[in-house]
Amino acid sequence: MYFTGCNMTARTKLPRPEEVQDYPDNKKAVMVRAGGKIRVVEKMISWDEEKQSRVEKRTYLGYVVDGRYYSNASYKKAFKNNVSARTKEPSASRSKPAKDPDEPQDNFAADCYIERLLHADAVPLLHAVAKDTGLVEDLKNAFGRTHANLLLSMAFQWLITKNHSAPLFSSWQTNMLLPFSKEISDRYMADFLSMFAEMPAAMESFFLARLHRLKEKELLVFDATKIASGHVYRGNISYWPEEDGPAKKNVILLLSHATHMPVLFKILPDWIHNICTYQDQIFSFDELSSEDKQDKQISYAIIDIASFSLDNIASFIDQKRRIVMPARYTAGSWIEEIIDNARLTPAGGAGWEKAKDCWCKTVPVQKTFADGKKRKLWVHVYYSEKQKELMVSQLLLQLRLFEDMWPYASPDEDEIMDDNNLRNNSLMAYFVRDSGIPGKEAPVRDEEAITRETSDYGFFAIVSTMECSAADALESVDARGPIAQAFESDIEHVPEITAMLFDPDTDYGHMLIAFVALTMLTHIKNKMQLETVVRKDGKTETLPPLSDEYSASDVISLFSCLSVLVCQNGTRLWQHADQKIHEIALRLGYPDLFKKIPTWA
Image (cartoon, rainbow, N blue to C red; front, top):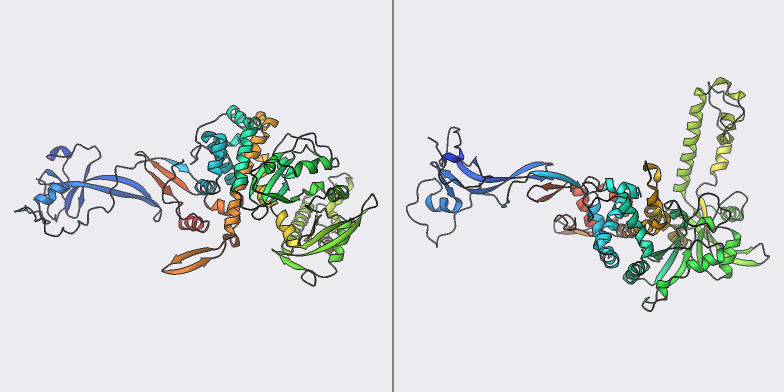
């Protein structure tokens, strides 16, 4: 006989379901001992983030007493807490009995057996940013839901993996939590990337939507040609005849002056051969000539250093173009002379101002050009101790590696007079001449030569054709950082490049994905500049900006362990959503990011 329904002093065997009268016809129902009683329950296995382990949740269905099953309601009617039979029905006016401590607080549905694991990484954060900036809506309205989801998913890949490769997307998307989860072939990808070149109306609609969302009226033009040329492997001719190397892709970005939020991009035609035509192109945007442009205007343009020359600067001045351009700082150049004069007063002294993590000063210059005319421009000189330390450490590392080669070289290497000879290496300029014996000892360092070389480290300059502060010029040029992160590509990680994915027809597709990635990255960087006010224990606390602790790349990397458990019954559970990323989401303005699994995936 089974002793069921009373406090059992000895461990008794649980009955089998067929031995229990009125046992529920439920394959998931099982019997367990709980609080001295035999209970019938449904179990659900879930993941506890705090304990980092699987936990069991129970749905209590009823009781087994003397070989008979009672539901929870019928048990309470038939028995008291000590399992003796009730003599009368409980009065409706009496207060409800205390809740059974064995009764669960939450009613879970069915067993949750883990079916698979989806990697989330920073996708939930990036999708929240895309929605916050209006990208989700604008992409859907311009290109349709399916294409919008694929564009977003590929932009997520570029920001998370830092590998801007269309061929690798199909393998990366496997088991990822993404708005686009359909498997795609290289042919599908090539067709997808190519279609945007044939959709000028949709592209203009998208860019106008981005322009209308921008509250600021002042815009900047950013020449992203050098950056974009590292991403597009075939493209237009260069408008710099002195530049050697592969063909350039002439890409221009329009940014907000205040926030550097991208508004649109333009790929210049391949017939540009001179700087005057180039100027006309970079300052002309059809989107700004429309009737609903909202009085937005271009303040000035940031030109790539590859275009730095006196002839080009003269052309910009003559055309009354307001531009800011990093300067080439080479030995014997007119820029070196200006920097040397600025250095007569040590950085931090009279005339120097603090801008970010460097010192700066502005020098007005009346420069005589090749045509004999004098033109006015402004040279902004900067000194960064941090940059100098980095450059010095890189040089010393090169010298140490060079020294390490000598003991392992062939003793007769001094007899070999070719480029591989250690003494012919350019680094010998930092060592005492004729010192060192190949195969035995390294040469002696020439400390004076090293000091002369590193004395210029940390100095750089920016040229402008209009008067502005050195801090503003630096702030504008610094927009290159996130642009490079979004646009630059590293093809070393692609073992086999599918040629059709790098056809010129796919350029607009590649650039559009980079534009979407840049928009999200810029929004994150802007959010990271803000303080966060939170309430803890009834008190208000102000947290410092995230930018004081992390870079935007660091923030994205912090989400790398985030994943989602998918159960057979359809339940989805966060995994590794720890306190750190909860805090990061809060400080970025997304406190509800992990309240539920997103419905877009």
